[in-house]
Length: 249
Length: 327
Image 1 (cartoon, rainbow over the protein chains, first blue to last red):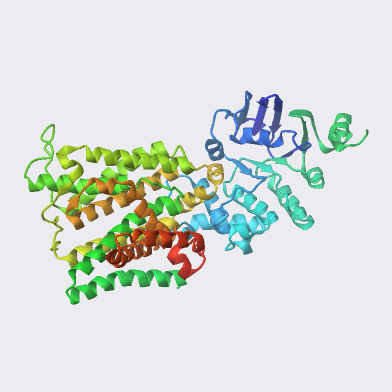
Image 2 (image 1 turned 90 degrees about the horizontal axis):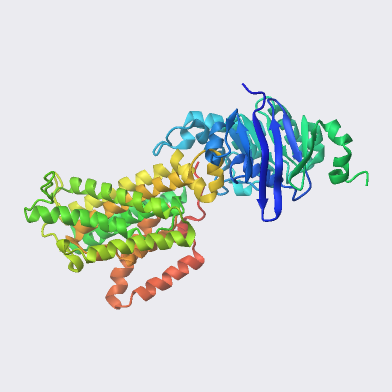
């Protein structure tokens, strides 16, 4: 097998004159957390959208598990085991927490969806769903309607849904957004343990979390990756300090 | 038992009790009214699967209602004139058997829903409403200009079709058939809403992106819902034609589509028994106010306005309060 799970090569996407992604090449290796940092408007969300399939790149290609997935739909990539969590929660807000996770378990199970037997009464779905909730620490909220959750809890639920998919890679868009210090610390601990299950491509603004978690960092500025390396390398990189960390000026 | 369940049970028992009382009191007209309620509620249950569960505001469900009606009309008219429907390449004869007619009604309306859905579901929102409306109107004008089956005048079927072991001309027995069909559809709808399919469809209504990210297709979910929805409304159309022993292009009209939607809005969108409450209220108003004035629809309009403004959950929502999430 390949030693990279996910890779982009020369990914380019322009909106008019703005190059939101400019020749972006990066890879995600087994067992690592690869964080992407960059100022607002650097093109992080555009990059994620291309990797997950919501947006087609103008040039470049994306490989996942050794297969070219550039032309595949979001759905096909999800089925291959690419699990995404959203910056702005994409959850069924009127449904309960348990229903949302069960939906994930349903997607992972594959095959035809039943029309008659209640979903929540099916042991396999329920077990997968409850196990995922338990892991992110939302088990006691199973019966809560999702709209009533705090922002931080919604992030946790996003991660729980991703877990049910038993993915080969996680793409996480700001999983700590809206969390308090305590929640952020817990999530950091959790993601730390998750990397052995599947590598994580992490976009995050919380620098403490990023520096604590990331095996490697890529710095994105104006659509270009200006540096990739370990935390120490990035901290020491003069370009990064000038462009992003706001030091050395 | 939740309050909504209690209300639902009361509604269903009420719909059963009124015609039974009328039967004892020898008031066949009341039985016919109750039969109308059951059939129209069934059409509403069909639409509610698309509208309530799937969020698909179809203003063309009269197409399926009419197809069901014409399936009955065409098959029965050939049977009563002893002329085959076609003789080459295979001989197809008309029939007076209700189960066969229902099967044909369900299959043809499901096929129509598959075609209409495949084309319309590429749009959403107001465009979806308009394109389903347009399809409904196409069927309406087609029926008007098809002289072989009565054109504008419609088709009369002199004797009600047969159901094995029952005398369908006896109002209470025919009511029983329609009531059983409604009860079965309600049971199916309740199961569907909680099934994996229902869970995914409901999520696709709230957030299509979520459904895609777990590897399911919102389009396919909606199309399946639309086909199931059309099939149930088609069955209601066949029963409605049998109740009146008459089919006409009016069954295809956009007013019919609107009426089915009004049942749901009056009763409560996405509420399991919304169509039952709505159809019962509609028929009662039509009967009582219709006797007072030709313009009873004005009062219906006013009521609809009040419901939309002040009771978004319809009658059921007003009585049962907020919808409780399943389980």
